[in-house]
Picture 1 (cartoon, rainbow, N blue to C red):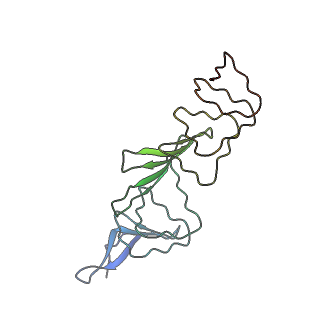
Picture 2 (picture 1 turned 120 degrees about the vertical axis):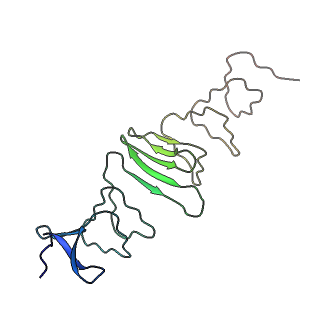
Picture 3 (picture 1 turned 60 degrees about the horizontal axis):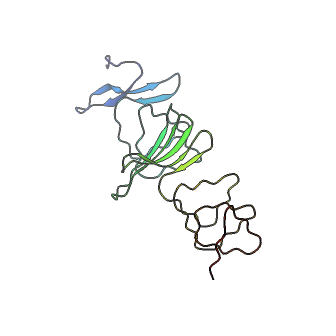
Length: 178
């Protein structure tokens, strides 16, 4: 007769073949929840409902499904490349969403701010074109390898050469060489 079992624990055969319960394996008959206390290594887990991991979930392989929801004060999703390439993290913090390079000092490579402003660290290569509504501010050199079309007024200073077709106005004198 087995008499030393604790209610709610899973019963299994011990190393000697004796029936025993385990404090790390529990089953709640009210909620039908199976609980593993501590670290568990499982080859395959199939869940038809919600899986809750309170202290982190490490996945090597593929996650298949329609939705992945991360809920926390500052949720983040880390991508670790096992081939010695840069690692990245997507992080939501204080209403901002950033894509960070965790290999090189957690630099935010792309940041979408809560006000809609987007910051890009490094170069932005655009293959199709950029449409700007509003003001565009360039704080460095602007190199244009093609034509520039201007439908409004172009204001410029310290110009040594102008090729203009049409009407031009000048603030101060105009020098025309012989």
